[in-house]
Image (cartoon, rainbow, N blue to C red; front, side, top):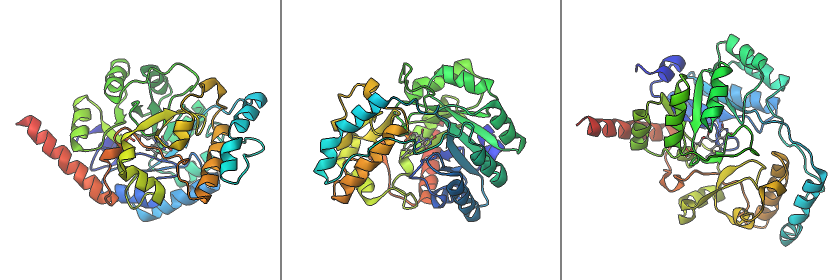
Length: 358
Ligand SMILES: Cc1cc2nc3c(=O)[nH]c(=O)nc-3n(C[C@H](O)[C@H](O)[C@H](O)COP(=O)(O)O)c2cc1C
């Protein structure tokens, strides 16, 4: 296929299974890569040791290309008053589950920025691609990855972020629309967010950047892929569509919710992790709907409490507090093995192209 993404990464199809920290697995990524698309794992929530194990496990399961995704957020700004007020806000809710809130919030994940140990893991394991979310690492990190022949991708949620990505010498822009499930890749979560749809964002980025664009957000079937390709993107990245694959790490409660009528309602909230992310509207989201963003501690401090609350609730059989990320297309997700899903997407895409060609 004469397509830039396919040529660069030796793919049969210009489709990417989105990296999904906590949900994507080596088995999922390998199944997708073996089917001719690009499989991804997310190591944003992993230590360098855990990341190395996941990467090596993935590479043992496929000889195809692998994308490894890291988080490039600015380190959390501590604010003792805001943090203690946040903890106090949840006291009653923890008590309901016979538990107590954490005494303090902690940075449960380290950013990739300045994380030499994680860089060494990537340089030693050499996945075909590395993608950045929440911003970019230093010019030195980017140069060292590229010098190993690693292809780089970065998420943009606005044309301005796309320009920063191009200036940094990244190879591909992942244009993430507001429909997308999971964390929004916005560089500065406290800046204004114009919340552009994937459709508008792709066009806006193509106006200001010559880099090849990958569309992410709201694409659930082959007709959706065809529509995005018509806008001139080089590929499409799908996350929510892969959550129900048996190879994903989504737990039983999350899967049940995805398959229920409730999945038609999703909401963007920063209250679970400290950064805006699209989640199925569960009890946690409802509890947080009127909380002002200024009250929310920085990412990932907030996530330390979010995870503790989800754990306390599920220990009592209540699964309404998890990070049940999903995009607006959640009701359209199919429960198929990943390779079958890739084949179905490609067949539908082909059928949609044939229709438009008459
Ligand atoms: C469960 C879930 C977890 C996600 N985790 C990550 C992640 O770790 N890194 C990342 O770059 N994007 C992550 N995303 C966002 C995806 O990369 C992508 O932008 C999004 O899935 C596209 O929209 P869609 O869900 O409508 O397909 C996640 C998405 C979901 C649904």
